[in-house]
Image 1 (spheres, rainbow, N blue to C red):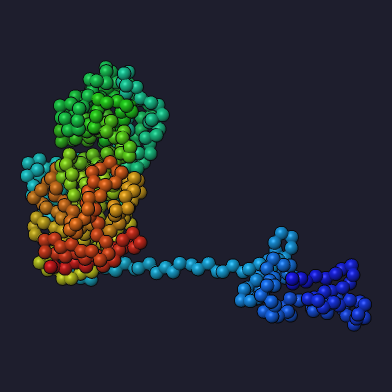
Image 2: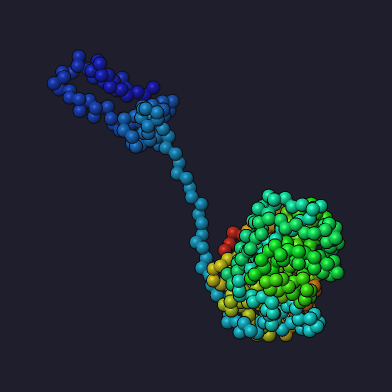
Length: 487
């Protein structure tokens, strides 16, 4: 056992069996400083000690002093009230991280962005011109770069009363909608809310307001022709463009939803303070978690902005999970690069346009839609006057369905899809392209299972004679880099 001490009372110092005392050496020849010097641990060759003898846990004299014994480093540290030898901890190794890659522009010069603004040539556009799948964009009712005022108005009935606490809990939904439009428009479209704090009691029974399914035109007109005039005397519609009515939880007469559009011109959209562009009410369908009101409002207001519905409202589309204009319930709850381009929410320097006829092999670094940093967000290859290929980078956003819990469902990667200008609203004018053999993946989000379409590093697809290969990217990368070439 290795010990060091100074005997104060006996004036004796013991060091590994060596005794120095006033009895064996005259005090005049042994000063205090010489005794202390002889007692310093560094004078003792620890490596010469037997392996069974260790200084670990024993007393030491000077904090911070290190000693090596049998290849083990000890350090003198305070433990309790005493200084004690303890093993020196091994340094924690920090993970080696590669530097963040700098954004690089495409390796070839693109065509003028106007080249990729394909003109829509669908029968819906020719006949109605109220929804746009392609250019020119439509802004008859609400400019895409403006501030919009929406109202949230709770309404109830004597036989379907509203819960006073429900109106407060729904305010998080209004903020989500505001934030979402600010995000997808990159600050170009602002949404402001006017919220009526109390339930407005409507006359009659709730049953006389029934809307069996969304899109029932006669029932929709009957609903709003009763609701808006009854609310008009209790609510100031000055400056309001969109009225979103809140129904009592548990009601069953509006089973899905009910919405009215500016192009239908029903009399009820006129109020004492001015005419509304549109009105909505989310029904019992949206009380089933994890559905949310905000995504319903966002989808329906997208139509007021005259953005077309991607695919049928009641059938699966390959873009259902990748664009909120395909479904408000999809896992990503994103607005695609094409729809942002159409709405004027991507600047020209965020779009790289090429014509297939002049396409040279090009490396393109894609800035994900979720990021506000500079760089290309949509690479568009014009194949013909009515066909284009769109390539973009996807990452999860804070509005994504929070219950995507299937690891097989990819949330980061490259999305490749096509635009067909001969198709319009309620048709699959945007269609995702995916590698062969992709399995159908289900999630616990309130949407149908679908094959995952996001490409990962090393994967490629060929469509309309153009091959898109992913060189690098994925969730651990800031950008996705692709190579585009003719087949």
